Length: 93
Image 1 (tube, helix red, strand yellow):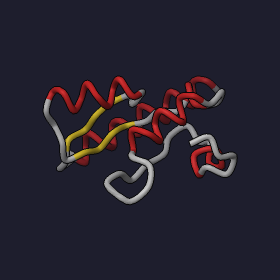
Image 2 (image 1 turned 45 degrees about the horizontal axis):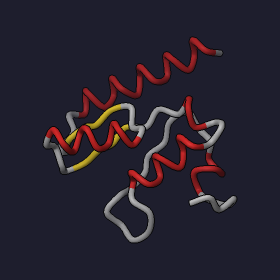
Image 3 (image 1 turned 90 degrees about the vertical axis):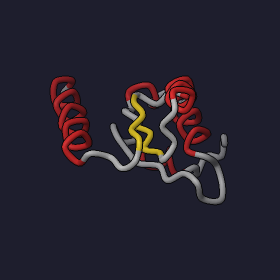
Image 4 (image 1 turned 180 degrees about the horizontal axis):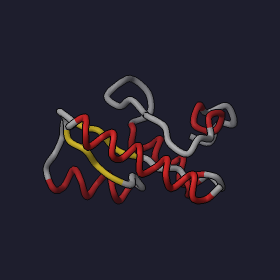
């Protein structure tokens, strides 16, 4: 995952979404890749998964995700996360 044209490198945003369960790199692989980049430490990455056991949460957090949400996601919880991320970005600016 060190290819210069990797989509994560091209999009360098403070937050993003990554689809997992599809062919290609897993969401965990993409998260690790992002965290390895100089710009990747400031990106907020939230795992949204159908897997919600404690070991699933530990695995995503160990990979570098900031948080793990289990499907179905409560829309209010997701909006609160996005709002907190936006407020943190504004405070940095």
